[in-house]
Every structure is written in structure tokens, then in C-alpha cells.
Amino acid sequence: MDALPAFRGVNEEGEAVWVDATHDYSLDVIGGMMNDDAVLDDDGMIVVTEATPMPGYHANIRLMNDDFLSNIPESITIPTPANPLRRWA
Image (cartoon, rainbow, N blue to C red):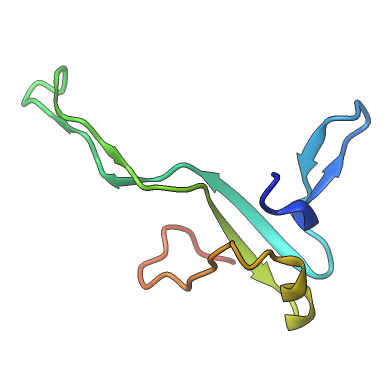
């Protein structure tokens, strides 16, 4: 939440929360993602190889106009994935 302050707000209890949709954007918070799935034995009971996490924290952001780009810090990378895991409707 510290990295994307333009996408957060405060709820009734005074807690920081994601604001996941406005007229300017839609935000789909994913969190951590894995490079590879865990591999289990033939019985599916024992982990043979652990899943490996990707670095960083992940979210999908759909900007409705380019004006909102100025609210995103330069330290945040927003690549267009070649093989997205989630798609916008």
C-alpha cells in the first residue's frame, strides 16, 4: 500500500484499504505469485519440489486514461504481460 498511495483509502474503522475501482482506474490486487508450481509425488501427498515465488508484489491495473499515470511512482514497473494470468472482462 505504501508503493501505490493513489490506490488506497481509509475505511470506517480508520484502516488503510485498497480502493479497487474509480472512474480513473480498476485495480485487481494479486499479491505474491509463483514462478513454478510445487511438484508432488505420485500419491499427491509429499512435496518433491517446492513452488518458487516471483519477486515483488503483483496487481493488475487498468487505467481508463493516461492522466492517472502521473499518480504512479517511477519506482513501480507496469509491464504488459505476454501471458496474463488474469484478464479484464
